[in-house]
Image (cartoon, rainbow, N blue to C red; front, side, top):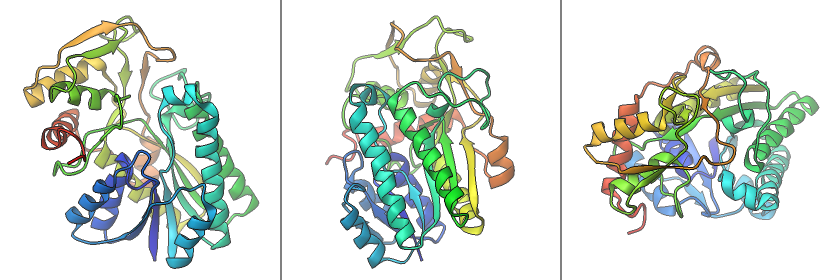
Amino acid sequence: MSILVTGGAGYIGSHTCLELLNAGYEIVVIDNLSNGKLEAMNRVSELAKTDFKFYKIDLLNKKALETVFSENNIEAVIHFAGLKSVNESIETPLHYYHNNITGTLVLCQTMREYGVKKMVFSSSANVYGIPENVPVTEDAPLKPTNPYGRTKLMVEEILRDLYVSDNNWSVALLRYFNPIGAHESGRIGEDPNDIPNNLIPYINQVAIGKRDKLNVFGKDYDTHDGTGVRDYIHVVDLAKGHLKALEKVISTTGVDTFNLGTGVGYSVLDVIKNYENTTSQKIPYIFTHRRMGDIDKCYAETTKANKKLGWKATKSLEDMCLDAWRWQKNNPNGYAK
């Protein structure tokens, strides 16, 4: 029996593939390589010292997806595949709705046809929008502020409705906070296609000399130093959370939601200072205007995942910064040769 990983060649997907293989699971990976990198799959195989099947297909191609299910004995699905840029989703909302929602509908239809009813879904803390209180609990109001976040919430609702229609389904909805860092080997990490949307990849590119400075968006937030506070979680801790969720969905039925974060908030300046102290790299930065939709602070309440999944983030901000820099230093151009 194999675990199907959609979007497995991406940042979080590749780290989860490695953890699955290290835990003894057989995996099958599909990815259209719009964000993912084939070289990441080669390195996962090298690190795990084992091979696995990879299909370059798009979830919107039902015929190709049916081939994957017919050629493999799939037990459960970990579903990462989806477009993920907040800014891009605001510019091209129809593209995001079609890709993220229709792709998931095709996946669920195919799973149902082949009798596979267990899924771990990659959702996002984006579904909370501007939180009324922190730390954010799983039962906080859901009011995403952009099309990307709305696609995640809509998929959550689709999966809930699917369970109502057929109680044999078992789904874990994992709401990530801010994944950063890389595998400690420095062999796999985050490799953005264009200008990075996220803080650490941008800091990495400043540290390696690709960019001359970091723009810090806003310095008048209601936080201890005026910069936005977020819950940063090491990508390997996050990947391990998927394994715990997978164990749960394989052994039970129902739909449940879990925050995956550390429960600790760090500001942008906290991260910059920590990165500089940990890596000895100077990060020049300037303050610039706030970005539309950015909020003061957002960090997770993680008690539910601790209690129900037996999962807890263990890596520190120092680990995250050091592993991120190791990846960038070893791979100045990402996965490109």
